[in-house]
Image (cartoon, rainbow, N blue to C red; front, side, top):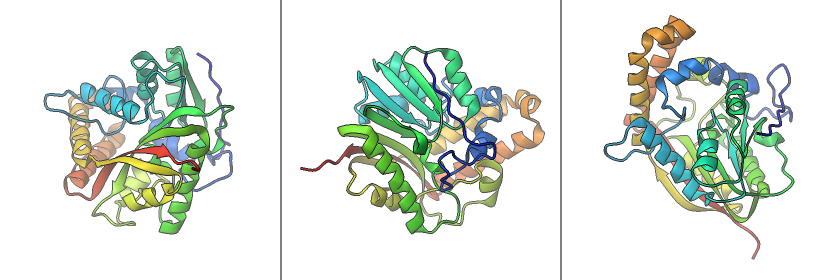
Length: 299
């Protein structure tokens, strides 16, 4: 496997100097806690985002269905080059090259632990880069782009809506420039539902996901306007409620081991975070958007 590692500065500010989204330090605060800790309660592929359930599914089969959904929506199967923005521990990259015949899959992450895990697997055709999408350059366009669970980190808390839309539009401009004409983008993000901007529990913003905030659905659509056409949009909040419940149950089963890895206080924080998430999706305070886009080009 070939890898190109690019890092942020020691303070965690993205190398580009942009401060609209979570810094590398903020991303590493959460995702670099402990691979072994996350392995206790995620599925075997370590997908850390909402699964896509059908009756009778295990968490693992539902997570694989989610991966396949985005690959299908992005028209990524059998393609030469696919980009995964916010690649996590590599579940999408692995699925792309092993199951769907993609020749070269590039993953972007700001988590050192995630990049190291992917590198250690030495998957043929997989490249992981420790960099933000803002800093990513490509010599030739990608055939498809997928981004699952990264959009939530693109803006910092308490920004006015117009500023959020401006930052989100920069992401869609990046995607428009990076994907081939008539190429597709498949996006998954938690969104604000009944919950209003500024009402997210401070515990989540301070102890779980610092320097991150959530979009309203309309902010995403406005940011993409004129650059991408929406092909499909679905709100699968009930699937994220079920996913978080499965994670919580897994963590409870392996709690003793979890405490040994990260300590009682951190385990208690994650239990609280998962309980808040389960309730938020059940009460429609939050949504879970899966949106597929097609690049718009001049006639």
